[in-house]
Image (cartoon, rainbow, N blue to C red; front, side, top):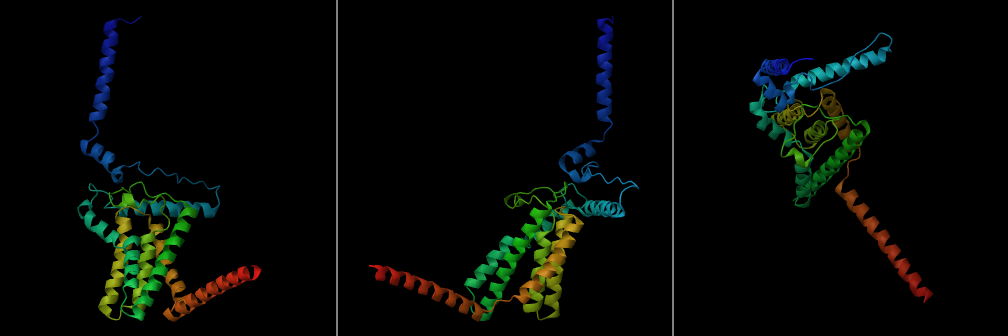
Length: 269
């Protein structure tokens, strides 16, 4: 049986060893790992181990996913204030907000209602329909794929009102590409304006990677998705005359049905 003195000495030795192990970790690393997951080496725990017995398709897919994860983590240099480029985070967030669906929908509907010409109203009508189409398609794909956002992604006060649970595809990238093609085809008539529109779309898509909101594949698929969406909008372009004719036909059918219902009631009486 051990004496009380030896037990006390062993307890002191264990406590001293635990303090030494905790002191061996640099303070800066402890603070960074707790406040910003970008610096945590185990922040993204993914299993990409492969074996030769697996099919070649599975091995290739795991390799591409590993490259996607590695490249996305390298590009997330504005994930938080402690990141390498954390000083420009407010500016990148401003660029990010310029591609959000809320200001685009509000601006398009307002211009549609206050348009001074039929051509302007027709343009804003199709832009509104294009934004609604993009919102529905992106939401459908995200719900179907259900890919979680990167762990480096940090919620902000503004993004708390627009919480995104899923990452694939990037709605900002698809919206920016679709709107860029829209304005390049319908509005931009000078070289400087074309450069400005394309630069804005590229910066919005890049901001999602810098802020670690998405993976590289999310943004890439969003770019392709937005490019194809404008092709659909262009093919199904709604003219102001056709819209008026459609509304007039609908109104006339409704009035005819109401008149027939009143006539049948009077005939029964």
